[in-house]
Length: 459
Image 1 (cartoon, rainbow, N blue to C red):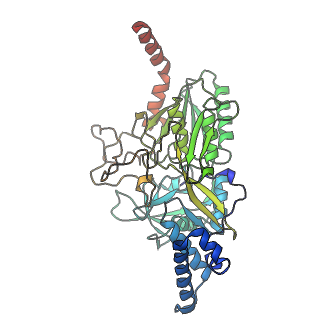
Image 2 (cartoon, helix red, strand yellow):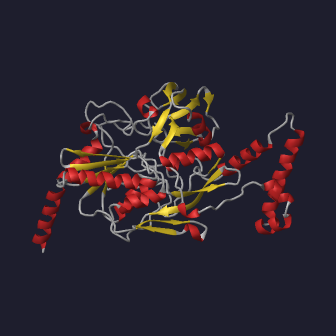
Image 3 (tube, rainbow, N blue to C red):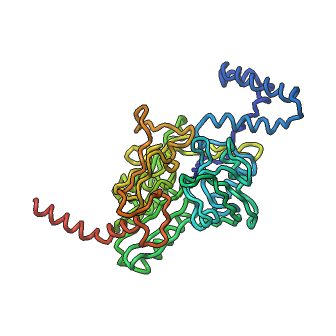
């Protein structure tokens, strides 16, 4: 999933699991700070580590043992909290800049299985046919059972031009199928734009990187330079896995008035309770907007959709989003490694937490002209499906309530069975959601004129 990189941390560092040293040096202060119960548990950890080091049948690497203990500890928390060794930490920093060597997929854990959240457009995985919801069974012949997301990413990254084979299981596969994919330099161009039917501006944001807002502003200016009479804008956030919180706020500000609240966060510590508002002179508010979302729209993309929906700035069209409503702070550690720690939940301007529930569209439109899933078939992975997900205190699910079914349009005559979210449109005409958005914007003026006439008559 996308990482929220909180920028007000400065050079803050946390020394995590210098545990054993802490037990030896300054024990009384440590005990007072943590409480006797925590101290006793750390003493137990130190005792076990000492026994393994001294008595295990083979010589052990203490560093690896401590790293394994850290990973095991964090696994007890939510699925977005993770320890990153130095190499993985450096790769994470590269990701936010928009270039790395790999396949171009976003993965998470669903029922202890590595599951594809959303393939990144125009990457090797996307071109090979990897789909959202695919379960990754093996990576180069190695089983992914009990493999962490971080280790899986590490294995799939590599030198551009080198091949890797991933074994995929899909609902309609009888057995896993091997996909051999050649790694490439993944240059993520996060903003793509064009004019459709010489009438509507279209901008697709694939994820939120350091330059996303700047690229978006360039795209907006170019669209209206090409045609100043555009009827409106479609902002496509489908399969956008998220990214930088700062960029989500700035992108939202491109369409809202100065001072409007975009999102706020709440955590246990006071410095995690932050309101993010539109800065500068505010954004463009004169034209109508439709935002396209789907199950692969997560994290930062949900912030944008939620903010513009709450302020009535855009109509949200598609299906329920992924439902990741937590904020991760990236903390560098002393040895060059890093900790990605969930420190807060975020809330839309009207106080909605979308954790597990996602953003619900104003207009529900499935992806394609395809039949409903058969009973018992698995749905695409969403936040609520991930192991250890956080609860939503503003919209708790009743006890024993199963996850809601994927909203789909009734099957039409002679249509074959298929997953409505696995459909990939090969043209604008086949993109059912895009066509509904275009219809809405092209008739926007007529609708509002009729609405005004009805109001005048009623008066």
